[in-house]
Picture (cartoon, one colour):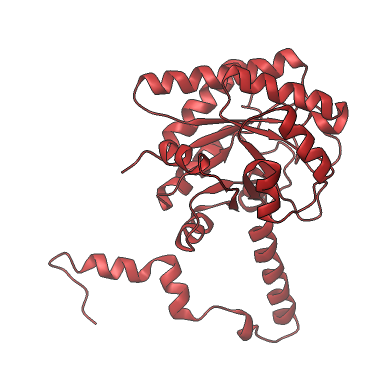
Length: 294
């Protein structure tokens, strides 16, 4: 089997902008893969919401996120880009985080320059660390990646800056260029406010760029062909599936609270069993003497 980071590098070398639905647990990742997508992004916002029932405000720990990466990567063979937040500490913590996410199966890890505790990139109150600290985080991530490569493994480094919000686009561009020069594989300038800003920053900071498509966020949601024309290699949709699932749950709860049953909104039981994996399990069971009958 091709290593996941190798597969992701090959995908990102294609002349296209990949649409990337985001997962938050093993089942959502499995469903994304079964739907035919080439890779997924593990959204920290969605993991915090689903695992803790709490907002993405730096409340979730390294160990909880690493465990979620492990469960997700065990459920799918496709490459997973995992949200590593700020690395949970200083440069040495960043090194540990990169090694831990690699061991959990991630093809790529995102490290950002927000002040800890961090928060969702499209909410208020974001602050970023000074340039020197931001650079140290990416230096540490690249150092850990290179150490992994020396042992025959690989993981891609996705370097994110949130400097646009408090310091302007010029500072964000400076940081993106510095991150790339340090060896980051993918660049992510969070929350540009227009297509014109998106075009400017990609021209000023060449590299593989990630677009963050958040419904209701600061950045316009553009068609995939336009994103590619602007120069993006991938576009993540971190909340689309979570939002759709939550809306369905709320609608179902409202019907049940009123004494009804949301029959028209539920999956057929056979389809539900197939998505979860019952059919695949039964097929595999036939390999052994104690095979299931009927």
